[in-house]
Amino acid sequence: MRTPLKNIICTTDFSDYSNHAIPYGIALAKEFDAKLYVCHVITLSSALVYGESTSDFEDVPERMTTYAHEQIKQLLGEQPVDWKPLITIGHVADEIAHLAKEKGADMVISATHGRSGLKRLILGSVTERLMHTLPCPFLIVRSPERGFVAPASQEIKLRQILVGCDFSADSLLAFQYGLNLAQEFQSDLHLVHVIEPPVYEDLLRPGVEAAEKSQQSLRDRLNQDLKDMIPEEAWNWCSPKATLLVGHPHEELTKYALINGIDLIVLGVRGLRLVERLFVGSTTGRVVRRAPCSVLSVCAKPQ
Image 1 (cartoon, one colour):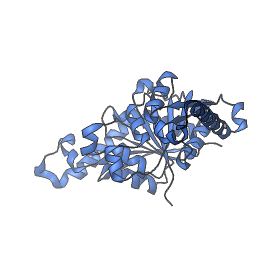
Image 2 (cartoon, helix red, strand yellow):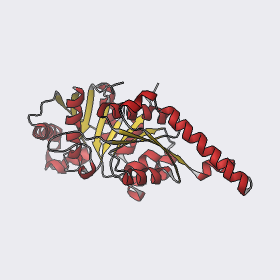
Image 3 (spheres, one colour):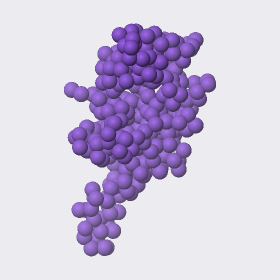
Image 4 (cartoon, one colour):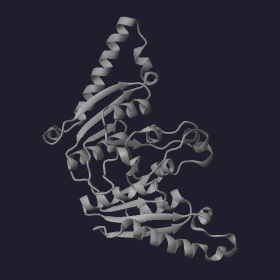
């Protein structure tokens, strides 16, 4: 099934790093004949970025908006895609999520530096908040050196796709997106499940010999479950590979991506309580901060 991309939102704060997302928006809009919205959210704290002072604060929003329109026009130039600027004022994550719902976005694209430790605890992460609030998949772009879109030509080279699967509803939805993209771009598909020892420890508590048999039985069962997820017809257009790893999911997935030259990691996102988000963070969030490539987070639409 072709991935349904009719409306794409690409975000930028006009920094060099955030502008790395623009070629992805253009390339995917071309590939799927989609409408591209280029979104910039003006925050009151960003007045100095626009060279404004507090003495003429009443005119700041209008000047910021004019400046944003000019910047977006320069970024897009004469690209042969149907595009439109989206400029709004407010909290970045809230405004992007609102616009995604309003425009019926099928994907939102952003570039991120990633945060960890105290900075994320105090300031929060716009990227992580968007992963849990967007009504559509969220493509998070990292360095252009490891990107699957060439900045100059906007050519898409998506050869290796990794889908992390823990057999939850969220990861099964992520697998469907990964499978569709692999078919679209004739990519190799890597389906990976990470065995976390604390999660499976109750199954491995008998004596040594019994534990080894139990562990092998568990591995065989999980490996078969992964293979059963792959439709038979998928072998006609890609080379699916099911792999079991042992350890912490975010560490094993990022290591696997680096070793195997993965171009895109696709992961499901489930909701977390506030304390978990602040002090622990989701597996997907941790992968985003450490991944050597772009990450597509997929969250089930709220009912």
